[in-house]
Image (tube, rainbow, N blue to C red; front, side, top):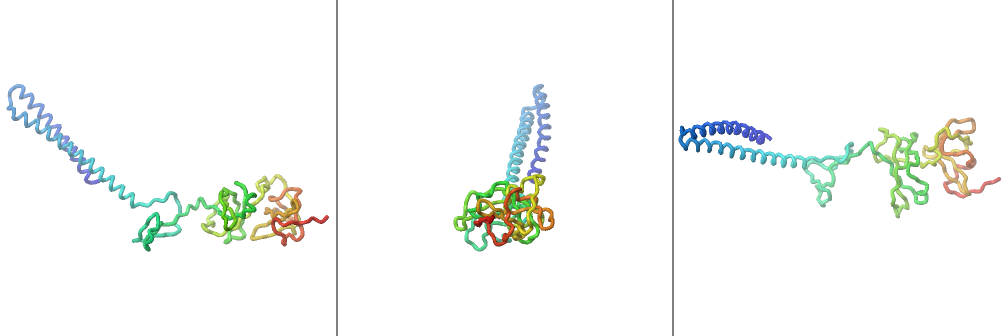
Length: 280
């Protein structure tokens, strides 16, 4: 940068000298026309003008060369600067000073495939494996409740973002990703979480009607309250959201619809999809 600035200043000085030389040449040519000066004086004035023009052209070329060197130096600097493709927080430093970094491992003990691990805390998601036999019940935008292992008494509302269109043949599962309705500083990457997929009734407005059921029908599993609904000779485990308790009854504000049959006896011994028979 300093070299370029010095050369650019030289161009200005040479331009001043060129302007003066051109004025001198004009005066000499006027005297030459009047036969008052020798031809040698006119030739010297022309030579001075041509010399300054040549020196200005050279200086401008030097300025261009200096600018090119500045661009090369800036590119070298940019090549030494590693920029993340997104903003986030560094959670681990994977490379130390003196180690080699390469996009692929070269097999050496000092070669790393990354410098650091960065997490975008604003885009945390839940990734869960769902058994193939239940994946048909999972839909995009379906409401879910997430419970972190670190905070078992804190149900977190979320919804299904997408179902990954591939299955794990060994585990017979399909990956599902869900997003939190609202992020919280307590939610950290790689935390253990249990997810309960809710029925469509949960998404209905609370003013659509509330249901009263016997408190003996409720099953508490891992911080999530559920009931078993009888349908077509089988029971279906249904996560519910509770309202106020009323004696031996419990108000359900989401998860159940009026008229559905709820198991009131022996619910804790049942499992989802189990065949049952209703005694009249």
